[in-house]
Image 1 (cartoon, rainbow, N blue to C red):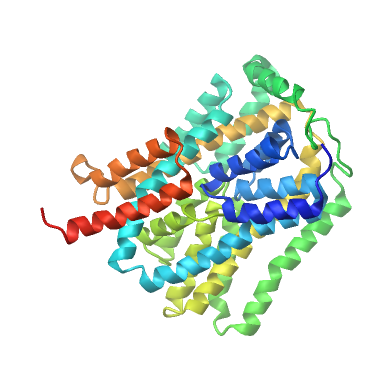
Image 2: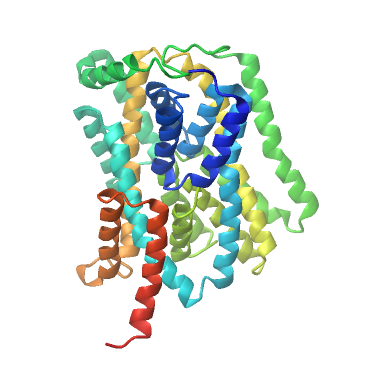
Length: 440
């Protein structure tokens, strides 16, 4: 396979920004379909080697995977193009949807439409859980790690970074003293790698300038810090309440740096802090933001940009302009660290691709992330299916039924996600009119 031109790759990354529906699992599946199956630019083993590294980073794994893939193909400029185009289209789409939401979101039609979408979104998340689990749980050890991580996160409320650290320690000890637990997953990996000769980037491919370079490392840190400080200066010059924006910018920077597990891990944390502590939006508005995020292209973590929009909109007395500023700032500070993590880490992680212990440790991290998706599924289910209290009497049977129908339509009958989103919106509106305007 010949090297694709930068122009050809640019067309793909632009297209990806508009077709990347389905949250992290859907976006990863789309990238795998195009980059691996159709175009054969990157081999299966190389793709999942990159994915495993992105899974252990804080922030959105799908966008980081796009940056990593662009870097593999065309270096730094390829990574920048892939990462920016992956986010840019969804940012403008979400801005338009956010304006419509605050302008007409309280109307009965908007409420009915979103009510139809919510159970469909839960079905999408459940499908994501199944897809990620199939590709991540390669042995009985992976299943036990996923189960233990879920118990620690959901029942014991242990912070996810501590769980990641524990899994890394467990993986290191197991691979050294009990390597037979990884034998099955290693054999599967070797069989896959043996049939990848037709790809451009394959497992044995050695890229230039790999490994840790101190001068390059500090230049990248300085560049990242420079871009991080630019909005602070612009806010100080062009806004009259710069003191409000600084804590918001710091909060979303911190969220991007410390929330591991991608969008599914960060959302419960952001929902709790944004709703209960800062009161930037209500609990139901947070769920509505998630619905918007799931039903539009781009990374699911763009829901944070919706939170930024609502924060600016409410603080400045229903100002659409300040809401737009909050959305842009949140997007910038959410995704800036992703570029830094990839550009610093990829030359190092690529230099260790033949280290079996590191591959085994990364595979266990991916298994631990499965419980994060399960945690989000439970969080959404409680809000949508139990609008009152958590009792059988309070179950919303209409939402439950549409969730089951959505799951069957998407999974068994392979209905397109975009088509089903439209069907769900129509269902919500039809159900509203049937219950409010028709008498039987």
